[in-house]
Length: 536
Image 1 (spheres, rainbow, N blue to C red):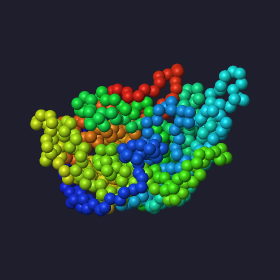
Image 2: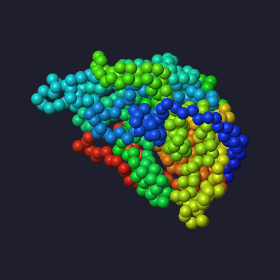
Image 3: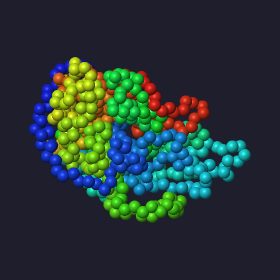
Image 4: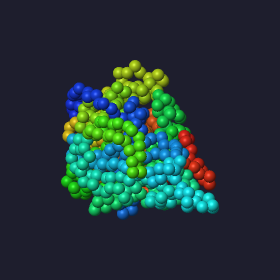
């Protein structure tokens, strides 16, 4: 552990009483439907509403230091060549990014996004790209989509952005920040003939100013920036390199794309008192972030084209949440199967019903069985008895990381660090202290707080943070929050993938250029890239 954590971390004893109170669990309400991040059973049937990742961090682009970037990704595992209609946001889904700045688990600020698809030429046999035959002539087909308003862009989507203050309660309401033209999503990166110079002419041109305070928005395809050895994790933690090597893993998401909604807001637009806090310990400095997708309760499907727009005859009734996501991997690796759909239809305000699974995570016992990290009171490790132990139940350290935020003074060497935001109850949100300055590119650690980088996960989440390794070590107790267990192998667990397969951008919206569906002059996209060149 780096110098910051060389001193002993005091036990977070003050959270013990709080954690005990979290176990007052009321009756579980079963939703009609729910989904999120493919970790819940119902999401497999609804990928267009599947929220795959959430990010929140202080902007690092030059001149944007006073802003916060909020990102929500949807529609996972996009094969770049998956045409002819490729991947679009769903016109019938209400996508939202929510912010709580009071600690009660109820949104105080919501950015709502709704999309509208238009067909330019309904007579073409093709889909998202349709060359104008009259323009083709005899000299071959010109590059097809070279701007967002190119007539060859046959399935453009426009969208509306709303700002809602207070609880939304399934309502589409609030102030319209921008709508329709010119808010256009770029087409997918179809291929080098159809979408040449993709980022210059299309991706970067889809960033729009909204409102009067300098906010910006982007919605469209990006490269899948979450790197993880998916196969190894869900093959009962069959991690390569014995689970303690930072290299040699297989990035199961490499070569895929995703749909991104990104909103960049001035800091003062997100804080409780509408100011820019000067100190990390300012009670107004921490915000909680999560994203949702919702559908209306009644839906009758009768596909047709009306005025050049795909039409569904009836969508009626209030919106009901079918996807929820904040911190990565919580639902996959903490919430039991019988409650995964419930979790994703619930809100942070109702998270007391899930607190027991954070206090006594089953994943710790699985790690014990696989790696021989013995959890006291369990049946014991399969591997030799000399293996190190993991913390027992009553995991107040995990409560702090995921459900309440980390109190001031909990990080040795950084007495002013905190991202605590709670009313005394657990609320699973991604907490970001907006008064902590961003770390320059050359000094960032993929391990965030565990790598002495206070601007990284679990203080928000940047696109490059290695949340898989951080979460594995946190559950095994390999962090300074449980000093007795912050030893090898607990603090060295890794899926062996420590870098993304393509570079991130150092500008909004930060996620990389989407993979091309076809290339003949360069290197084609690759799935399951092995190894990494990232620094530890």
